[in-house]
Image 1: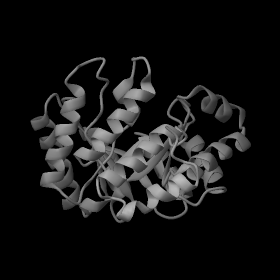
Image 2: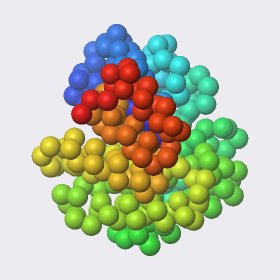
Image 3: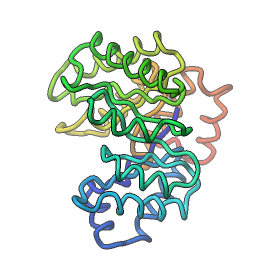
Length: 265
């Protein structure tokens, strides 16, 4: 299960304020805390910095990689910002994101070709997001097949079937889960990710919904999530789910997490 730490995002008030103030120490501590908590990749997003996103994203990449040695997920729809961030990034990055929207696809694809970067691929096109499982699988197929024709191997693709709040549509949760199952059946080597907390947007006790959704999505075949690794309870659920799903041989990681005091319930 690939954990992509979500916290370095200027849409979060404290992060936005820290970026505006140039508070490198705080931002680097957030990066270190996420990796220590179990994140394998860190998302970096400064999309709210209007007019200065390219140079700000480049700056964030450099300061984060000064203190952690995990790859970064470069989160922007702006190809200029992504290109600058890629040039600054040490090692192989993840690009977040490409979609079937014509303008976005044509802008992001050249950044992928000829590299080893992995990519988050949003299951949407110029008509919008899917409203049923069949549409979701059709969009996923177009992405996997199209990227494959451009030399992007399936194991570098992290399909995002797009989580929407169950508060806005009671079918959105089960639709996501069924879409994940169908995609994994058709493309077993393709990865599935999502912005996990979208499931609970606008609802009370959001962490409860996020934790429940994570376990259900893992059981459906999701093998990555953009999430908060500092939520100790959701991380405990993740360890437990991996053990139950047979992804943790002899429950070694689960037992280690218990010994290290990480199984908070």
